[in-house]
Length: 314
Image (cartoon, rainbow, N blue to C red; front, side):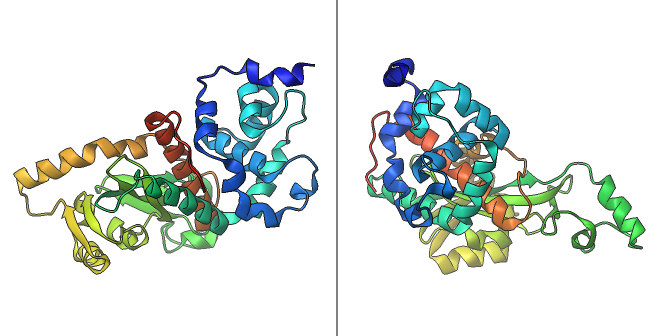
């Protein structure tokens, strides 16, 4: 009786409704259908419902167990994922299996599909871009790894010895501004400055410099705004080869030029303030999955704020 009323239990202006109006998850997930005859061997959990649940996980910053409970208790979450009011929702083990089934490469294709739709509607352009990098922290306390290094007869625990004793073999020490150190990865992004959508994202070990990682997110054309981390020859050559004009802050001070660049970059710094800096997984590939999901969710939220009734057609 109550199952027919689930639509009435979620307010009409709920953000989840706005996202459902903008994104057709069934069409978006069509390339994944071949992976699932019966989704993970469980009847009733279709791929679009599962992927929508993963989107919710990153929108609400939930663990797998928290997501399981969220779907059990939250009516709006059920509606968003296509579950009826009394329908049994997935347990926490389903989500880890689903992530492994989708994988980073397929998720990259979904991310590109969404951006192609945004581009076709004029929401992403190739004129002005903002590039930058931020930290993703794998682990804060490293005393255990240092003890293992000592026990193994290693004099130091650093980027040279970390793969020998660390649990995450691909994480590295990174530094920003000669004072800010962390252990983990870097999130490198390119943002279209027209409406602030993320156009590219790449996760690299933390010891890779911003300029070295630029090749993974450098646009193919247009003007690139960046901080002085991209002023060296490596970054300038990468932009030149890609056909981009550099608007990076240079080491040689030009206060008028630098002030103009900083003013134009400032509104897009929110891309990093809105995303978690904690690595959920181990290894570059799985953290790249995290990077794509965070970028997708950021773009979805941005889309909602710009177009309440905007509909994307794959």
